[in-house]
Length: 449
Image (cartoon, rainbow, N blue to C red; front, side, top):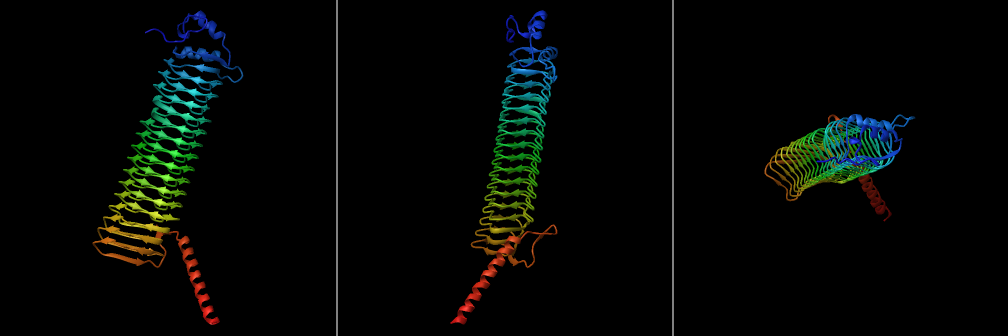
């Protein structure tokens, strides 16, 4: 097969096959900010070094390139573009990097396209600056370093394949696309910032996935993604909607102390390992409709400000809701609790709906709530309901063993700390004050007559 390298004008061969005298003449005629096109050319490490040296700016000491085309080029040795500045577009589509690829601190002022590129060894883009960037279908066989990289506009990694990926501290100012991206090793996004939409739908995480402290200012979509090992979202901040519908978490899923300001959707999500939502704050609606919790589910201290829905969910392991607070309503309608021995103590300002739920083991339910609905609820073993403030509806409930319902006089505590019942207490006082006012008016009316 013949050489595919683009012929260097006015010669009749590509840069790699030019006679040395012609090559030296060509390189000597280059200057910083020159437009170059070496598509299909094979570069040794030495040849690339000579090309970039010819483009080096005397003042900054960094290679300065206008438009650069390396489409389908092959870099047989290490490709060192460290600190290079691309003033125009940079085209590396289908390029092959047989050695390591070094783009640390490189600056891409316009579009940078690495679609379909092959990185056989390490690829370093840490601290690089991108405008529009595309790595669609790129394959990273070694470590891929994007730590502290800055993407000022949209970036697309859709259908890319990573071994080890490091995006810690990366800043995505435009939309970030990782749809159906495959991470066979660790995927590290700790402390990254997504200012616009982040699309990771269908992404495959075969190693550990870390998003600890990551900030999502736009919508974050992880629908149908798979996490084969641990998924760490502790202290992550979601300002927009967070969609984890139909996600498969095979390892632990940790959202402890995360904040979710928009709608949080975990419909039909499967948690095969631990599901940790300890002290997680849900400012919008929290939807876990049809979710499956095979391991322990820890929602202790979680705060639900919007409607919380666990309708049709299944808890095969423990379900810990100690000190959880619900500002509006909480629905566990049709939910199955296989081994839960204690539900609560929790506080729900609105309705706590257990209608149609099923408890297969002995259970104690501790709740401070305005209304407890247990319509057609089924208990397969003994059960105890300890309630505060609540009106309980047990219409058509099914219990084959003793069921006791009692009012707890003292406030609930969890881990020796009081459960926050302040909203219910205030509502109760307002109701008492209103009733007292009506009574006074009635007495005054009788006196006047």
